[in-house]
Image (tube, rainbow, N blue to C red; front, side, top):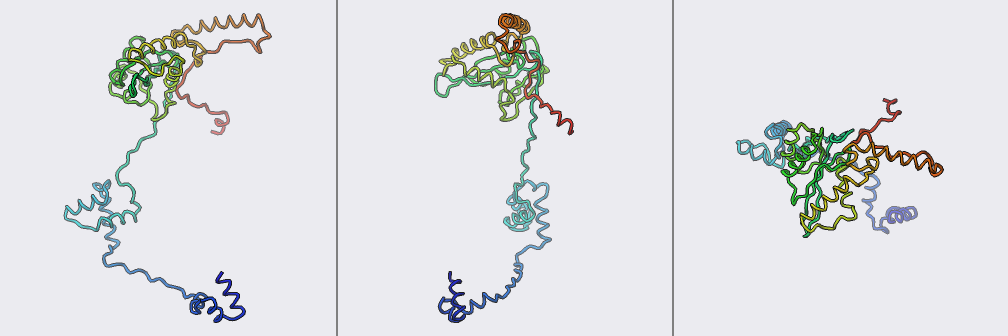
Length: 334
């Protein structure tokens, strides 16, 4: 606004009058109109500055093998104790920053990417998976621990127990008892990365039996889908209690439910057969009987069906993380 007023007055009354009316110094006005280039003189190096050679020597000291992981304060103190003074601690930081080494000097832990577990079973007793879940006890903060071992092909619960606490010793015993009772050593046992699952006792047992150990990736629950789905089935059961009165109550309820699950529950993932039927190889006979019943129903009322009905198929293979199939276009472009 002042510049606009100055320009308007200047055109009519001249620069001197315009400066007087607007309160602007004529010297300032002319200096702004004809600025003198300002030449900055280089700042002289202070007497205390280090030479380039000295800075290179200090950087070499900081990067010695025995000092490579240490902060400048540690290097400064150790060199001083050895009777050598190079510069101040702060100058050491400046030299490191100038060379792009101002970050963390200590070696950082590196963890290679965990491989995706890819497990396949085409028959019972090939791949077992197990996990532990908590069951609410009678008092606040009191929990019981349900261990469950599942055959991924048949979904049959091969072994289980309910304990007051999670224990690697009890886990090892349960796995051993389950394998002995089944009479067949599985090819692979899969679990997540809990303390019991990765314990030395469990690992040594599987090594002794010649069983391949498999673990989920950290914080990836989908790598153990059969155990997670089973726990959801248990806890979403209509009869599942809000809490258990005692350890005996929890064991009794779980035993009853697992007997129902193995022998009565028709599982959608195995053609609506019971896990026991698939595990003990009676599912094909049951499917044949179902096919006969559906054929008779079709013969009586064919108009009621869009096509000839067939019983749900039983999967021939079951996977944990099945490899993705390449599309035809991707194969052509390869």
